[in-house]
Length: 205
Length: 303
Image (cartoon, rainbow over all chains, first blue to last red; front, side, top):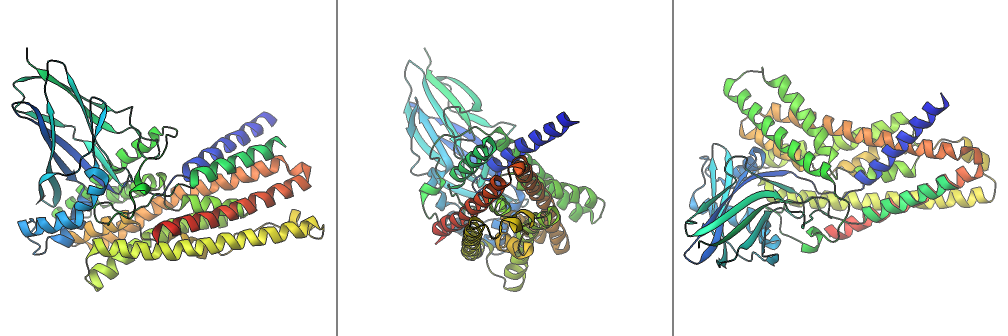
């Protein structure tokens, strides 16, 4: 009986310790969910950049639609897209558009993006934009790691299960790719390794 | 002495982890205040649970949206039971992640010695106020005032944060001053017996919970807006309440574990009489200081 009592006490203390550490975490947590697709674009010289497609959850979509689909026709016209860009996208430029790129292990800062578009279809919102990132191909492999995450963890970004990444104009190159956790990067006070696209390419012999 | 050392170590670790403010501010719609608040500062222990929580939240969020659509399209109450179960689970998992006042709740509970029932009332009320605040926000801002949600949510969140964190700071200072006063008195020997027998109650659990939970829950706000976009106001309110009940269960579990853990730790040193009293006073004082520091720290980052 004594052993059981001591066991229970130890169990409670372990739980207590866990709760102290868990509960003491910072106060941001995912409220917005994105399913992401990347479309890697090559030109004659090598990598030209990549298209990012973010498909938002229904709740965030309805929030944006409520505020910015002014005529409430369930689609976003160019003027509305411009407002969405200004009021519900451009702020994340401060966080490198949530896109973090490494070229051969060296960090490449995403300072600007091109061709932003926001689409509202069947109540679901998606953002589309192009990230210019020129990397010339050589005989040896160049390695590019593309991770997308919100450092504040207010947004959780997942790769799509179907066709998470596509390649365009890659015929001139040998290309290898995989999706996995980037163990060399830690976010949210080091507690989470973000998922990333690992892309290797070189000139065809 | 080993237990004392362990508890002090725990509190020290707790304080060290707590003093890293990051804000629940939507990065898409809120103007960034300072990038430093959002960047990883140093490596810590990996927590695979966080990724799992995020993934499950995403799945439940999606399921909830599908079921609301189904209810709207079929005009039936058939998916309602399953929908409420999903909303409840979403609330539970949502509150299992960081935030939702758990840090304050833990500090506050550590600083008091409440009866279990009052602790449960305190924990569940935090979540209920947090959720209800989100529901009220949407009803007032969107339906009555017909103002834009995104900008207003940031403003309201900021104002309620300033009020909440200011009150929390005052609360922490009151606990600290009271505990120091009690300590001085017990050192003089006049209140020794009183301290042993007297159970410290949680003062005004509902009011304290309101102070912590008054900030609108963005999760509930978004669920409400989604239901409103389907012209299902009643269902939105029902879902908001169910999500809040789910969150209440998680926060209550945390509070119960903290109360039990603290009681067991103190029980282990109870046979040492005066040591137990000193230890409890020490925990109360440190926790009071922690509540005040957290309030101040969070306040400094919002103003």
